Amino acid sequence: MTDSSEDNWLAGLAGRASIDATPASREGRLLRQALVTQLSARTDMGTADDPPADREQRLAVLLEKARAAGLLTADTSGSAVRLPTGRRMRWRAAAAATIVALAVAITWLVTPAPESLPVRTADDGIVRLQADDPLALKQQLLQSLRAAGVVATGYESFGRHGVDAELPSPLTADVRALLRRYGLRAPPDGVLRVEIEQRPKP
Amino acid sequence: MFGTLAPAALHCGRWPRSTVDKQAFIQACREGGAAIERALRVLDASYFDQLYREGLRTLRDADAARDAVQDAFIRVWQRCATYQGQSELLPWIRAILRNTMLDRLRRAGRELSLEDEAVSAEAERRLDDLAGQANPGPQQALRARQHADCFQRCWERFEREAPAHAAVIAWIAQDGLSNEEVAELLGRTPGATREYISQCRKRARIYLAEWYELEFSDA
Image (cartoon, rainbow over the protein chains, first blue to last red):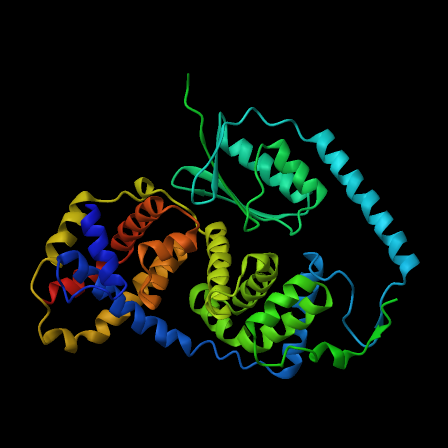
């Protein structure tokens, strides 16, 4: 299939083609028609008519997830919750800093240093690495990110390994250290996208 | 130092309960903490139902759809510093939801290569021939039900076995996405996206072969 055939198919599928200008656009248009019919039928499934009790429960889960992600700096849920006083906050901050420092130190000690990685960043914001064993590097990177408290997802698509991760904003010290360690720059939008390809043999 | 917060205060301030204002969103992003909690409640009240329906259409599972919307709300705040108010909030959040669902679908999908699925070049040619035939005649209307059932069966298998590709095709059809818009959604270059869309088409031809045959044979 040629690029032009693909473009015509996409135009038909997206509803932008003049009626059946080409076989490819006809193929796309018919698929679009069938899909739109099918998807509208499915809309009836999702009434989302939750009773208030369920909505409150859902909100509680959402806020818990937000807390776990570090978005809510203080527990303000429930009735009249007292926030930490200055002294208690300083203690908590000191304890948290110690735990983070220990976690980072342990991660540094148990994680083997990555092999030397040629890095190039394309205009699309995806960092592309090369490695002798892309799968191993992907797993190592995932492990390091998760150890630093980052939600990261690994995938394989068309033979290429990749990692997508949402970095905290602002970056924590351990995430900054991790990025330095892998020679990665902090992405401006906070979303780290890495693709790892096989290093060419010399 | 901070005093106490009565629950009622969580619903007050600049955020009316069912309206999401861009400037208030940006301000909550700057303030963080309790402001984000208030904003999360407003986002949930304003957008959950709509986003949940989209999630349900794509994921076909109520729990998965609810989780995906909530994960998207969390990502919204992790990325909120990048939102400058240049577009409306809902499309921006919906793009984040789709990205979240793609991650889930990638994890759930078997990610077979096309070679594994033994694509038949002959079948490809056959579809090209059929697609080139004349427009269907009135007989098609009489067999519409049969075609719709066949499509549903084929499409559901496509969704089960190649969920990410099926989702991207559905979003293109629903919203008329261009190559550039799909590239933005996938976080890939336009060139890599063109290749991805080509793979989507090839997979659609495999999974929908029976339906294509019916549809095009009615000429």
